[in-house]
Image (cartoon, rainbow over all chains, first blue to last red; front, side, top):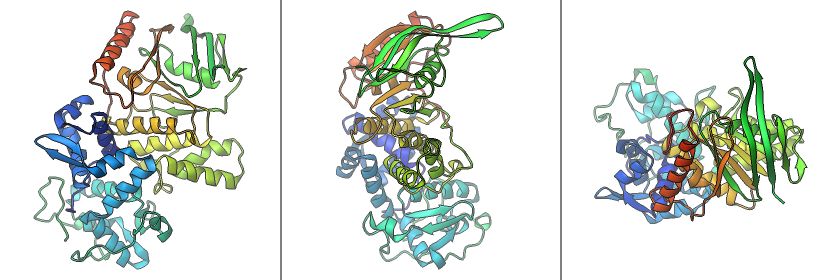
Length: 202
Length: 266
């Protein structure tokens, strides 16, 4: 899966899927937004993420569930979480973070390291780190120690529940070292265009 | 037997300018497995009514009973979820969820397993060590919910629980509340939701109690007999919205009415 910065929270993404389910699984995007009295661009980040995670397909301005999306909304809160975890793990961004955690001393990274992995602009780095930490926690892929500002690989016990949580990502991705300098010092990569898409690592 | 019976309840407060009547002659029942929404204009006493039901405050006249017994003092069979989440910022997610149980003097091991169960049920696994400031609004309200459910209340009281959340987050949590309420293995049996959002009331509840402006009295109790999930753009849904909106406006609004899925950013 391509790398994209998750601009919506897990609960927002689920909200979009619940909303679509209320429209029998297929609806014009404009009508979905209208249903909650939102502007259409307010649901775009969640929609884009839902599409990336393969829960929804958008064709000619109409969003429809994929089979996986259908399965997700039919599930309990816990089942939904498990499906989200499986999809999140397959994104290049989380594969890269998990690989870096696998290779890091004590399986820990600082949030500066994370910011470097994400390679976002200085302005967006804090938000990006917070959001990615939020998703990683939700999917139980890693823990975060807010006092030490450390990202810590989840214990094997936590990941075995979901299956192959600790398997290394597919080849091709070069994990950035955890040596990382301050994110304040990192300069925006040239391919970043501020569209919410971060450069692919694969 | 009704789960909760509210009979001829009045509530007034003394002020320098005399007595102010907040609500008058409120009567309705909450049955087992009921989902009741209370709507009405600002100041009609919706939130006060929730406090009276839980026994946090006493009615001036009339009576409130739970399973046939008068509510005297705080009823531990009920738990509240607040609009503002009401989390302790210096406690972690797990510690916040444990808080209500510690007040009930549960043994430590039992508290631990109970916290684990309700953290998991509400989708908070992975956030146990997080502090409220690290959480999104949706996750914070999940903590509020987990804390309320952990005491395994028969009745969940919700005071505008979604109005501080963005629209998509609220949509997700509304649906999760329905899931929890419908699961016979999990509390609560019944839910009482206070909201100013008419569509939200119709989307969730079996019955909508419509209160007038202050002093609040019951204008009508309306059964919502639509299959779930409910389509807000369907004709029967719209007709119900319109009917409740008319009732409230005819009953006289203290402030501007809020008919639609109104939400604001956290």
